[in-house]
Each structure stands twice: as structure tokens, then as C-alpha cells.
Amino acid sequence: MRLRDLLSYEKITLQCHDNPDADALGAAFGLYLYFKSKNADVNIIYGGRNEIQKSNLKLLVEKFRIPVIFCAERDLHFKGLLITVDCQDGEGNVTHFDSDIRGIIDHHQSDFTHNGNKELIDIRPELGSCSTLVWDLLNQEGFDANENIKLSTCLYYGLMTDTGNFVEARHPLDRDMMESLKYDKAFVNQLINSNISLKELEVAGIALIRHVYNRDNRFAMIHAKPCDPNILGLIADFLLQVDVVDTCVVFNETLDGYKLSTRSCIREARADELIEYLTKDIGDGGGHLDKAGGFISKHKYEKLYRDMDIDSYVGMRMNKYFSSYDIVDTADFDINKEGFEKYARRSVTMGMVDLSMIWENGTPVTVRTRAGDVNTRIDGNSFVILDSSGKAYSINREKFLKSYRILNSTYKNDTDYIPTIRNRMTGEMRGLEKFIKPCRSMQQSIVLAKQLDRTVKLFTRWDENGYSIGNKGDYLVARIEDTTDISIVSTGVFKKNYEKI
Ligand SMILES: [Mn+2]
Image (cartoon, rainbow, N blue to C red; front, side, top):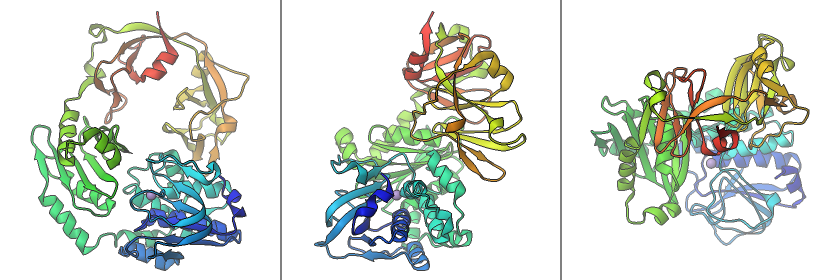
């Protein structure tokens, strides 16, 4: 979708979901300002039973004069194009309004198939907020959100509240936006401090009293009454501070599903992995080692767990999680006893970047790809390699020239994010694409590998705190020169890159 292509419509209506939140308002406001700057006839609306009530949202709308109109009536027809923002028509929290033609700008997993005009639909469930999506669309049109502090603050606050304080902001675009927006810090602080109503304080209090504790696996869980999703995170943060609680999950029901928030303070269980386990096949989730959040779709839940209430389900999955894996710690793991076999690595095309081509020596930089960030400092010898899954690694010039050959073709990025490089001193960001050259490993490297028949958590010596997880079917791969250097390779990547010898 390109926003400039929508300018041909004589009238544009941006519809937020009922009870709009900061993300819906921020995203709609961004679109509104762009269309307005092009002299389009544009409005922001929402329907439902209630006008905005939350004090932080009222503050936001009033202070920034977001021109949002509440439509209590249902039988309305909107001329021209109606775009649902941060939502999709047919969802429980979206009042249906009639219109000539429809579009969607949203970041929610869709339960529907949309047969409409592709140019009018942009749905990206991988993004933490709809504000991020709009920010990206605005950037494509050269519309800089930082030129309007009201807008930059709205987008920032939208992402912040939709991702539980950035905990669930896991797409590189989310981080790009978060790091580059120049927002009104004092005002965001004011918003943070008018986040909870007295009613919600009571909900949180009752929730804490009604905790369930599991002694065997040292976890606690809470089923809270309906409340703003942000409050789940607050309850979970509090719950984790209890001395006998190592991990916890707090959840509640929404119109079309359940919101969940997980926390962990132990090395053996990551909060982001817990949330993935709890939402597997029925929703999605993500976050960090210590904090994460996610969503279960009622529609999908009913299909798989019709006879189980949500409390039993969460308790069952939590217990199952703790008995679902083995631990491999490379510090005391004897590879010779484990039935590893020899494989040769096929030569595959990767990408390389000579960082000294970009900025001068001494510059601290972050290379960002879909698979994560790599921090390094440019020193004349610093190269970065992007492997076939898009993951970046640092490598020095000498080592690179010894083992790789640069190819005479162009590098193809297969992910939904174009790699970037950021100067951590100045904040300047550049697209990496034009600096990437394809390359290929010259040596055939031999490894020892073993396919997993059960989930494994791998603890390595270079990652003191975290672990990487290998699922059934994945491979443990050890370098033949150093058998304590073990990593996990997914089934698909392994089959593509290795062959048995
Ligand atoms: Mn949202």
C-alpha cells in the first residue's frame, strides 16, 4: 500500500475500533495529518457504546486536539473510502458502518479473508503497533513524523502502550521507530502517571488476592477481571517479586480472546518462550527473557480446547512446560556419549558488508536485521556476514578473506525487513542493502550433529544468562575443532545446508 495512491478518493474516513486505545488514535492521527497536508477531505471516527473515558486518552486527545468524532448512531453511510485503523470490520469491537469502498490498516492477526482491493489493505501482524505501520507508510511518502511533536509523541505512546512498555516490540521496525522519534518526554510521563483509574486499582487488588500458586514448579497464575491490558503487566511485575515465585502468568478475557502477560526471574525459563508455549496454535506472543505478552484467539481456542476452561488450560500448559525439555549445558556435556554424526556444510550464498565503507573507524554501530541486532565498532577490519536466514555475525577481515569468496551478483534479502545500520554516536540510520555483497564459503566445513527427539535448552559459555531453544526435529551442531562449541540449527536450515558424510 502507498498512501499517495489513496489521495484520489474524494473523501477519506479513518475508523478506529470502539473504545479506541492510544495506538488506534496515534495511527489514525498520523494518517489524518498526512492526508490533511495533501488537502484531502479526511475525518477520524469511532463507534460503539461509550465515548473515550480513560483519563490518559482524554488527556491525549485534548492536549493534541486529535479531531476524533464519536458516532453513537449505527446507521451511517460514509462516502468515499473508509479505512479501519488498528482493527478490521467484522471484529467484536468494531461497529460496522456502511461506505462506498473499504480499506484496512492494521497489525492484528486476521481471522477473516479479505477479498478487497490489495492496494487498500495493509495488515502486518508482525508489528508491535499500528502506529509503527503508519510510521512506515509515512516514511515511504517522505512525511517526517519528527516535524510534528504531537504526532511523534502519539506514535511513540501508541507503540509503548500496545507492547506493554516496549516489552513486546519485537520487530526491527518497532525498534527503529522507538529509537528515532523525538517525542515530548514530560507529557509521556504525565500520561504514564494517569494510566490507572480507581476502579482498575481495585481490579488489580482483587486479582492479587486471587492468585494460584504451584509449589512443584514455583509458578503463580492470576485470572484477572477485564481491565486495560497494561494493567496485566503491572500485576505480573508485582507478583514476580514474591520470594517463592520464579515465573508467573497473568491473563484476562477480552471480546475476542485472552490477553496474557508472563514474567520470569530464572535462567531456565524465558518469559518469551513461556508465552509462545501458552499461545501455541491458538494465538501469538513474544517479548524478552524476563517479560513477555501475548494473545489467545477465542475462535482458535474453541476449536482445540472446547471442553477446557481457560484456567485449567493455562495451569495445564504451565505444568507441561516445566516437564517438556532437557537441559544441555556445554560446560558439562560429553559429545562422545551422545550419538553425534558427521555432516559436511554445503556452500551457500550469504551476504557480507565491509563496515569501513560506511563510516570511519571508531564508530560504534548497530547492524539490525529481521533476526536481531549486532553491536560492533568499526575498526578497518570489521566485516559483517548475513547468513541464509538473515542473521548477522561479526567477522574480522583476515578470517573472512581466508574462508569466503565474494561473488559477482547482487544480494537478495528474503525477509520483511531491509537490514539497516545505525551510528550509535549520532543516531543516524542507513539502509544496508547497497553495501551488501553476496559471498560464499570456500572451505567445506565438517560438523558433528544430532537430531533432537525432544525439546532442549542449550546453555553455552558465551551466553551466561540466556539459552537457545531447540525443538523436536532441530539439530544440535558442534564444530569438529571444538566440540564444546555447540549451537542449534532448525530442521529447514539444517537440511538446506548440511549433508551426511
Ligand atoms: Mn494496536
